[in-house]
Length: 406
Ligand SMILES: Cc1ncc(COP(=O)(O)O)c(C=O)c1O
View 1 (tube, rainbow, N blue to C red):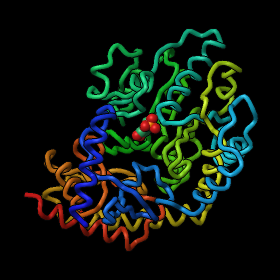
View 2 (tube, rainbow, N blue to C red; view 1 turned 90 degrees about the vertical axis):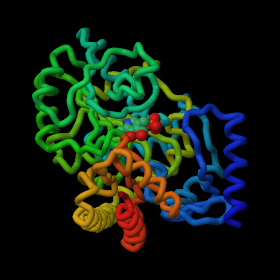
View 3 (cartoon, protein in one colour; view 1 turned 180 degrees about the vertical axis):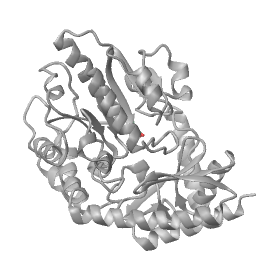
View 4 (cartoon, protein in one colour; view 1 turned 120 degrees about the vertical axis):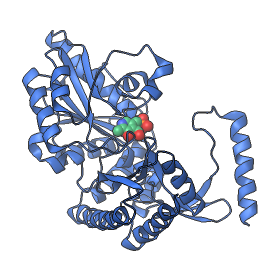
């Protein structure tokens, strides 16, 4: 059976090589079924999913609320067009407006697209005011997506190099206020920042840094954009990560995606007045953006994620995860440089840069799915419904595998 699974995966890989572009590198696992934090490959082998589709499967695999919403919506209508009113889209926007700083929402399909929309909204806002502001600022090791505007904001050489020239973006050092205050000027249209750098090593914005950014942006009239594509939707134990820092530090614009519809492709740009009013008819659009199916799933997921009882549970599970991670850190102080992240978005940074990827691969061999953040950090973004027992199973394996590192 086991061998049959490996053969089936190799066969799939050969088929993929013949017809798919090579954007994801070699892939050896293929899943055919999932439930909760568990996923099964084609030969029936069971994996503990501590990556959650890279922070997408917020309610785990095959959650009944997502399934019911999709099935019931699919029986009625899946897609019409944004030429017409879409009730579930309005219902999801009402929920986002009710629970956040935002006054208006624009829906699209991916994190990169949401950041493109934010970029355009910022430009349009100043254009409409007749102000010539074309400068953008983002931070070292950021990740904002792969489309050319979002890529220009992604301040990592390895992603940008083959695609230059890109639009000009100033790069400032993360968590370094004095650098940010040099780079942000009265020519700056918008400043994009992640509250946890999900792809860039899981560094977290300090309260002082964020308060400083808010202050500098307000002083210069620059638009402050939080990219909560990954940190949003209860991932960090608050509905949105900015809520850890207090309402005072709310952004002007925010982008979110990943876990918002529990696995369906959706993203949103959230904006407060007056920025939310800058787009006029014809300025921006997305054919599939906020269609019936994704928004029906989004409403069902959002109702669960935003309930105080659910958020309290995520918070408790996160405390449990961090208490166990700290034990591992203490036990392996010779190998672990530090822990990164907040809530159920956690990273283990190893001292030896070559060990992290090997650790991830060894976990895969033990049927535990984990990811990488940058080259050095093992990334854990499990479904938010993970139990303490499942956390124990995963962390015991991580502990044992770190023990084996020489
Ligand atoms: C913070 C952040 N922004 C943007 C993106 C891009 O999202 P997508 O892959 O949906 O375009 C990601 C994806 O990992 C992300 O983590």
